[in-house]
Length: 252
Image 1 (cartoon, rainbow, N blue to C red):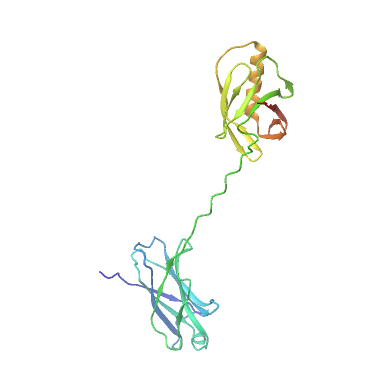
Image 2 (tube, rainbow, N blue to C red; image 1 turned 135 degrees about the horizontal axis):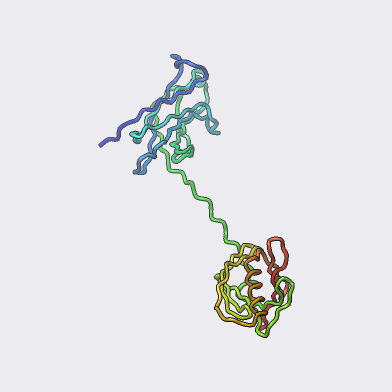
């Protein structure tokens, strides 16, 4: 079954009123090879360009009704002064959706203004490639997969016999010992930015000074915003770059 033809009257004039008898009308049809319906709101744009440079001479567009199917017929009125010129010309067409060209012919179809004949314009699907994803920020390998021992919390030295530790795995899982209980959490690293989710821990009870220190450690860990590494030392900082936790690399 033949597709129904949709006639689009594409007319552009430099003055108001109907085309004069000396004006030229170019006709033809626009089609594409994909077996797909035109999206709602599609428009057809046809233009006359000067060759070989492709400078626009005249053009116009019109909405395509929902019932429209390819091939789409068009009529483009060209002023008499252009029609009588001795230049070389071609026709270009675009089917646009949302203002963006979904189909177009990259090479203009030559047209003879002295003896115009109906023109068929094949438009091809444009490749509106999505923007490439931004690369994942590299994680400082001196920070992860390393055992760190806490030396201070908010400037106060560590008390107790058992070291406080922190380790960040390559998948950013965090675990360690907080002086009384073992704990685990998750880190987020973006460049020099470092944050920890709320830590979960075992529920052992220890001496009051150890429990107070452990609470201070968890509070400081939750307030970390960035980090600094210098040789075997690590400092975890808050949003104002104030040191919260000091650590050193555990020697193997």
